[in-house]
Length: 122
Image 1 (tube, rainbow, N blue to C red):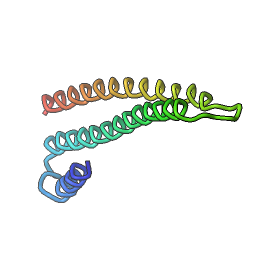
Image 2 (cartoon, helix red, strand yellow):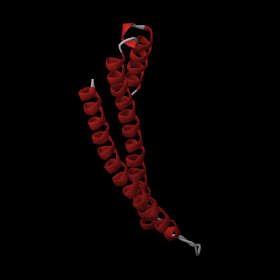
Image 3 (cartoon, rainbow, N blue to C red):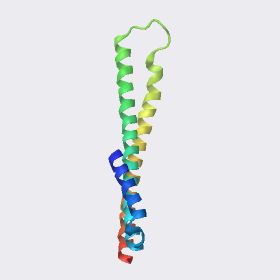
Image 4 (tube, rainbow, N blue to C red):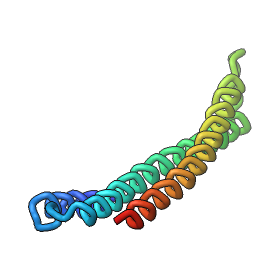
């Protein structure tokens, strides 16, 4: 991700100072491509965050279950009180990951269409 972001920044700086800055149609097309690249990296980063949340919640459930099965508790409060919260977190992260992936696909297709239309206008 860092490589793509640095490359995008360098291309944008080169475009602002170079001959491409005076050619409006090609500059617009290139800016749309750079914007799409940054948006894709941003969406991929967010998707990784959601996947991490799903995996983390699943591991918490497994850990709680293992502690419950292996420990003998003498107190009244048991680890069962954490299970509903962890299940809720797992459910929320799964739903968010699905919605985010769907939004990513729709946004990418819309941006692709916008780029093709702007190229046709030129």
